[in-house]
Length: 212
Ligand code: 0O2
Image 1: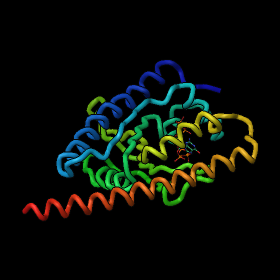
Image 2 (image 1 turned 60 degrees about the vertical axis):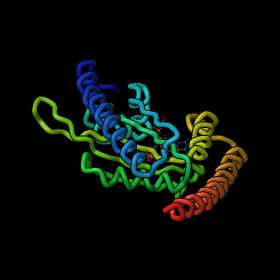
Image 3 (image 1 turned 180 degrees about the horizontal axis):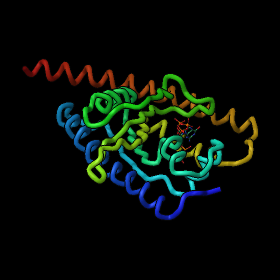
Image 4 (image 1 turned 180 degrees about the vertical axis):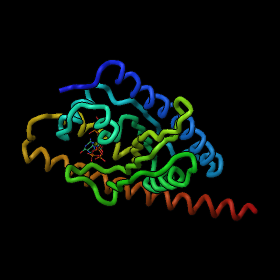
């Protein structure tokens, strides 16, 4: 049962909208600065979104909580969601470290689903951060989730999402196995690409050294 009225929704969502705007700007600065220092861009693309009212309520229901503002704020961790898609595996960890070392937000939690993939085969690095915002002259921390992954992981996750993640019923076991096997193949591909990147980097670094 929803005990959240329209005013409460609007007030609550406003906070998350502000946090999203702040985080967008902060991430842009951090990543541009990194790009300037490294001389190349590790990011293929960034997506951000505010979770819809319908999805928030569904997630709350799935988790078994009453529909109240308190429960939304306490138990839904990804109302503000960012996804940073990178070229290579090493880029993922570089970006994780850049975000973690920023003084502009607090780290609330992290999950390395690359080292420890989910049972489904899902791989990605998740950071849960707290964005400081001032509302009515009071400091508040608003939670946001940042998912960082390679293009290959993103390819798997978006197709998996379409195929099974949102399905209410159990999916057949053979389909689960197929998805898991696709995820294994993608892992191998990411490692191969990383290897190529390392070889090319060694070569270009040496060329630079020789020029000096
Ligand atoms: P959507 O529609 O992508 O937003 P929490 O969010 O922390 O309360 P949980 O499940 O412990 O709940 O958090 P987790 O697993 O760290 O992050 C959940 C999000 O990761 C999901 O958000 C998905 O975006 C993504 N995700 C997790 N597992 C899978 C998976 O097996 N396949 C795919 N494609 N994505 C996955 P939502 O809100 O569930 O969905």
